Image (cartoon, one colour):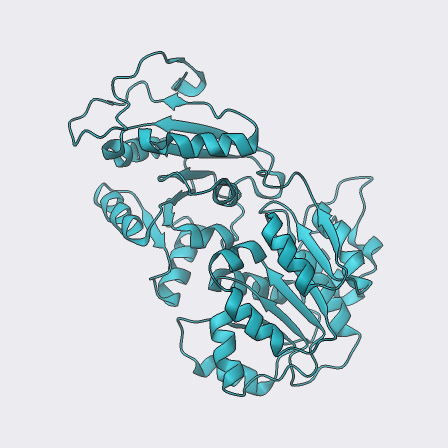
Amino acid sequence: MEKKEDGESTFEELHLHPNLLKGIHDLGFLRPTPIQAQTIPLILAGRDLIGCAQTGTGKTAAFVLPILHKLLQGKSGKHVRALIIAPTRELALQSMDHLKSLSRYVHLKGAAIFGGVPMNPQISALAHGVDILSATPGRLLDHIYSGRIDFVDLEVLVLDEADRMLDMGFLPDIEKILRLLPPKRQNLMFSATMPPEILTLAHEILDHPVTVQIGQRSSPAVGIRHAVYPVPRHLKTDLLVELLRGEEMTSVLVFARTKISADRLTREMARRGVRVSVLHGDRSQDQRLRALEQFRRGEAQVMVATDIAARGIDIDQISHVINFDVPNSPDDYIHRIGRTARMDATGDAFTLMDKEEEPMVREIEQVLRRTLPRVTLPRFNYRKPGERRPGDFSGRRGFSRGPSGHSRR
């Protein structure tokens, strides 16, 4: 959601419940984002919907607001009336956080259900009754099979970040859940990307859905400045630490490919005096929440994360995203860098690339339909001793001085 500017449409024009509008205004938001403006009327009209827009454009509120509006029209009870399924615990919590912040004048109850934490608080919440449930597939099935959830009153199903959910192997669990839901319901599917195989599945699950596409498919948010830093792999950590000394490096999200490499990089950066936290799937829920809070409050300048964080971090002021490892696919690149330049802000996306990763960067460039500038740091020693790999760029020439004291090829 965005701040109001003169002459632009407001949430009043979407005919949302007055109590919802009051909560929205208290938060200082009056103008819906494009994905919200286009999807909310369709959802309120009862249509099944596929919503596709870049990360950071307000997709969560695009389904939370109309769900709250629809549920306010009926009577609250003990049974779940809206179910949001997400691939990660961070996303499940994000939907519930949106619900709580947007419904301060609405007496609807919600709960987030996910693994990695004790069952008892979730069992207690379900026993007292919830209107909206935000859940990851595995833990949701645990509660269903234990007889704690009854979907007899279910009105709306949301598949949040559907492509990632299916990429992560959740399709069998999703199919099990779908078989347990009442056939008469509204179905919503949201994602930052929607490749053809996901669209095929969507049309099997959804009933004559309308598709809302904001921006180009598989394209990053506007306002992002891209740069690729060629560097031998054994010097990546040295270059990263050098980059972090820049004055504008206030809140930096660094992506590593594996949990082991994320932990190793975090330890090395901490040893060099960098204020750093780490987020990945092997961390406990308390550790993950603490890492996010340290990063959000500025206690950690850097958070190292695996791709699990690309879909679940809801922090508006990330100044830089740095790919310590080049992502495996262009879609992963788009999701990663979407954590900066949220809500039309600007941000920087840097990628550290060794020689072996160059084909992966070229694939990203093909999808983006642009060549990403190659950049070097003039004062960085690319000839430091270390294990020589085929990806060693240290002897490369042909770079000219570019802006900001860096050199561009």
